[in-house]
Length: 280
Length: 300
Image (cartoon, rainbow over all chains, first blue to last red; front, side):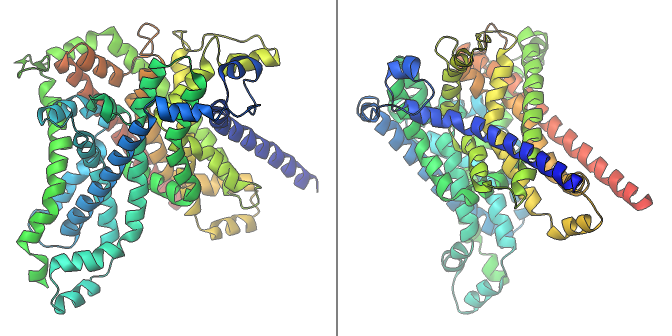
């Protein structure tokens, strides 16, 4: 009996610690949400910690209408979606060729492609900026999209390679006997079959592209092409005094990824951790 | 079928786009890092070859030494913080009898999906010496511990490391949850029948079986210290003085602010080598132990 009692006290202490840290983990985010609805005097003096007394929705109106937030938002959306699309198309095509098709050098090609897993983006910052500039892509969205695609390709090809290796060849054989060519087989059979891998990759690549900062910071030279992480930094430097509206821009920037996470939490955790595991 | 799978045109169409993008945007740049690190280059023209000149300068640079010291502090801090907490939380949350598991998981993981810019701005607001939440909190509770969190040259690096550790703890937590989920329930059943307490079962069964997960977690957090950049860039600009410089920040400053591209490339190549060395070392350490463990298991 005594032993049982001891364990339950331990459990209570453990559980309490878990909830306290959950507070440390979540409260700053909730605090941001709160202050995005407050005015300066409430943020600094009257009510720094709690729920806003009056909800200043005008902070959001101001952020959206005066601070170029729609422009940054659109840029982030275009860049992220284009990156997802391009990476998935190129990655799946490449993996199909290296896992199924027969040609000399296919092993070399897939090893070459997976080299990217060992290269930290920080390391290629300078030459990538030079290359993008040299190709004249630094004044278009393509600079960012192509670089994001390149850094995600290694991971995408590894995931697709694994998925394709697990698929039986019989379906393709049957289609081949029926006279379908390789392009039809790819579009009609392979693309639908690898859908789970595609879903994982969409989430992983979208979240990474949406939040990416280091490359965007050196690759985007025009104000009109800035993505949200850059936009927030720029606004913070320009409108330091308007805390409520700045809070609102940060909430708007975080909303898509937080919503995606809340809706597909298990899928997001899986997608993100597969990324880490492969990188290790 | 063989003919079907060796359609030359298809192979070219399938592989070319990926190979082209990867080669131009990742492979060519990484070769440039190593080649240009031997040049005195201001970003224009092709520069002049100076052998190991940049490396010699780099190793004499006090900022380089500070950067490495900071990488060590940063790595050590986030590794200890994240792995201890993530292990503990994963063990508690994976227990099906824990109440509110779903909510705890979400609370731990939410910071991971935020943009690092948002996270840095958020913590800047918390750590602000005059208007910050943390100092206000100390004042409200009546503890006299208010201070200039980010302008103290000894504390700043820890504050920054904390921000990173806070954001990515949930990531390590999710990795461990995935690792724990892959352990079959039978093992615990067996441990329970043998009379193990929960604590013993975790120490003898869960943690040894998570070896692969720990390896991944360690690689991510230790190299994370070497690669740290954004927190410094946004929160301290490497300051006060040079006290929060990292290798990436040194590289960034050299190339994009001082136009010493060759010097920047030299620090970039050191960055790659350090990350590679850490990855190889950890792989080797874990592989070695695996074999030893196996041997011990056999003899005992």
